[in-house]
Length: 583
Image (cartoon, rainbow, N blue to C red):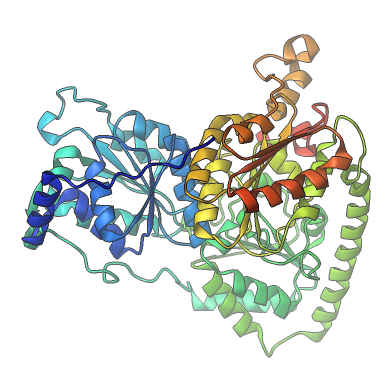
């Protein structure tokens, strides 16, 4: 029987003295942190306790900020990232010094490559012990600088709130990203008169980030799109993270432009929408006369820009000036907020539609729709495969059939994400989450916790590879403890299979199965250990029923369910077989 967590409620004489001192106009550094976060609209922090940071917790209690404590700081950082992605606001992770910080590095690096606004507040030994070898002392700010937009330490209690707001400003400057702020223990614990604290007023220390860019370029882009006969647009993660999805949808519908989607932008249009395309990107890029890229870099996912047609006009919109034109020449670049720019372009284009070009554009869309149907038809034998062991494409297909309109889908793994991207179609914006450009395994548990906390009315499902599941799954207990259970599905091939393929291809059978094979583990038992529902599936005909039983169990027991599906280890994603992830 899994017991519910105990909550301490006792009051000590020290607690009473602290309250009296605060009532007398005195405040500690930890309470200044909480006040600064509250001014920013932060309602939740993710953390794992440590002696360096406990005064921040005390401040959060006073400010009404929810404290979500996990079992590993990597999960805390992923959860803060996931919370930012789901809410569009700042995500906050608070860690103790030393290993508390280093454990969170993967989560912060993931947020950095995914342009997610996360504030990482880290503890440190007291200034009075500087360079004396205090407990868990490390050069945190120097370590974090390459993977953040801001990495500094606070040297006085008077400046705590000011430095918090400074770090937050950096998170939202240009393309969003993480910031790190180190606060020594004696700075946090010290109490000062409130009148001596520098506390920026809420709403008065940041400017709007909804920048339009050059108005002349808006007109140029509007004219290019009006005249285009075979345009396509690719929407990237910035479109969703900036909440520019409405303007993005209005543009493609208003101008009849086929749209493709990367990462967090999946779900902007529902399956079946005439402007929603996903299986013909190569043909679209090859034959288009205009290619509009919004909010995604020319990185490995885009073949560093080489996958775009050589004869097409290429226009790039991005929040970060450094990204525009990087790795590939472009026709026109616009820097600013995606939604603001797209809304202005549609307004500029209205009333001057080129009828001849528009008619050819509709024929172009019909051509791509026919190619989409052909591509889907070719995949159907894999999607409906009855092979044993179970074909991974069958799992992805069954998951897509299972999704509700309100299901948030999370992919955590290698081929698991690549294959499911060919089948899973989220029904609404914000309902697709994946590791992003860093390719981190283990993001799923933190993302699932964050998605549940940010959207208590929605269903959350995470599809893991067995390698990814084993990295962070113990925080499934955290999801249960805080009342945000989710459905976990595991594509279990007892291997780190994406990497295994490359090793086998390079070294052969005798040397290829080294460092990549895992044990055959019935992960359904893991959910049962935590008081939830677990199930093993070896027959493809049983997948749909197992998923429904998991859904019913989560709703009934309010605990996570695990469906462990044994998939064929000899099946790989096309990109894995082509090794495109490394090119």
